[in-house]
Length: 476
Image (tube, rainbow, N blue to C red):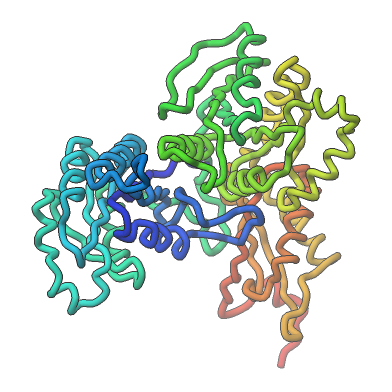
């Protein structure tokens, strides 16, 4: 498990291609293992991998001039103010900022104003002159004007056609001094890819607005006599509270409410969502708080899917259970209904609580502690391979074009989340359903309720079989 990825903010005036560039980075080059139900790529924040480097991007979106009381537009001055306001929010959160401009149109007053503001940030800055769709256009367009912005090199790109995007990404990575994320070896050997043990459990409290997140956190803090301190979080809307329970140190992060993109009316609220996403990045365990009277909604599914995609340990907390119980709901019935609405995380524990009266709140910390231990578990290789052998004998992979697919060896290569490399024959022929079957068998055998990652790799063929494999063979 790693901390927050460096955040790259894309800023600029409307219609310069920020969203297209964002989609090019996140949607088409993202390291997505599989499509997770409930997760949409159409959002203003996303993770991506580029040549082994892990980053996040935020699309600050376009602005239109606000209408005046007569229905007209207030003009360029208001537009410039809106763009500058949002760009400032991006700068506050970002590790690097890309000013996206229209390479065809040339430099504008809004571009200059944005550049002036960005220069004061001290962050690594880049100019992406978009809509340069060909080498011929590059020579015909007024790109030299953008050097007047004082950002150094100007990167001509075509987000639509992917021209120059790789060079821009590489320049950002170089300026940030990033190191590639650790990878599993092709042989499946164990690597030193352990998550750092900070001696504390970071628990992020997330959910839609008005589900009772802050009330729940306040209930925990009021009842606890071992609160060490309240310290500012790394972002304005995320506050870390430190407490101890049963000898375990917890850092609890209360985040702003998360809504669907179209429900976000104010740009400031969009960036509170970004801060919540980054709190998830920095967490060991995420508690998604659901409203008992409307749990399992589309927004809840999107959020749960995002946490699963980020491979954080997850617990669902159905808050306001006292109100649902008055209506005759039972926990057994409710659990079944919630599983139907969130079928892509059947392994996630579900708790019922009432932040208002404190019922069930303490169980959240106990469950988080159990998940934290599973999240960092290191399983013995012999036990893993005994299980793999049992799977191979009892339920081998389906034949692929009449040929068997064999599982040879498994090793755990990292923790947080537990990640396993399986050596096999013809990994491309292993179906998604069989991959899920293998995962479920591992969960059952080791009683794991945290995200697991499996990498199927083809075993390298040896020129001669090992001695054990040659025993008993006759001579030709």
